[in-house]
Amino acid sequence: MPKGKGPKGKRITLKMAKNSIRVAFNGRRRLDLSKMGITTFPKSILELADVEELDLSRNMLKKIPNVIEKFQNLIWLDLHSNLLDELPPEIGTLQNLTYLNLCNNRLTTESLPPELTLLKSLRTLNLGLNRLETVPTTLGSLKELIELGLFDNSLTKIPKSLKRLPKLERFNIKRNPLPEFEVKEEEEDLVKRIESLFLVKQEDLCGSCLNTCKGEREELHELEQMTPTPGPSPKKPSFPSLLTPNSTARDNQEEWRVKETNDEDTSSDSTDDAPDEASPNQ
Image (cartoon, rainbow, N blue to C red; front, side):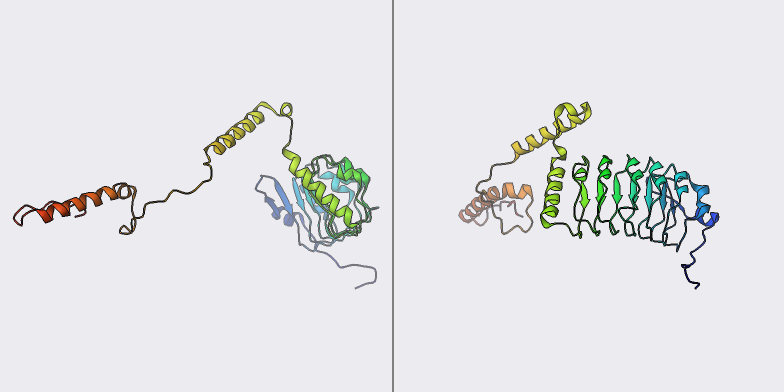
């Protein structure tokens, strides 16, 4: 192999790309080019720039070109497990993006473009397994974030702006050289945040949600009223002669026994030529 040149990746033709389009369970069209041995962004897929999801994970891509801005319909973009050491500023033009996976690359703090903060619809951002030493405080402007992965980096501090993200539910900062007290503080804060997600003011709820909450509360109250107070369990009748007693047999067993005893006494007192009485157990 000539010096200075990397491995020659697989060439993706337009026909191959078209055959790689799948319809996801949510009805979106996903162009799945994962695990294809791609080393450079295939220009052929620009003909399919109207897809909603693009999977280029598990390849050998070092760069994403600025033509990524052509994919304006993208909602879901997976670039994990490549060799990316930078991102183009044009990634900030993908205003519909809600999911961005950049895990397991070679990204540094300097290689994260400020334009990432323009992705106001982003709900999931995975930056784990990279080379980040600090986190841009501007990521705190992504108010819709629900999941944020920063695990396996070189972080020594978490910006306060990330701690204040209003919708954050899952925040993974494991295996960073963070002070122990800060890791514990982050975990406790996240638990409190999740537990308080359901604490809202009544005036903040719409009519439908308010009625639903009231109905569930009333059902819970009724259930509590119906729950018997714990106490000594009443002794249940035992019928060893019945292997599988049903409700009728259980209710009438004592009556049958009394009748059967009376019949036997009557039979013993009667003469031999008297007619026999029929027993309920016959």
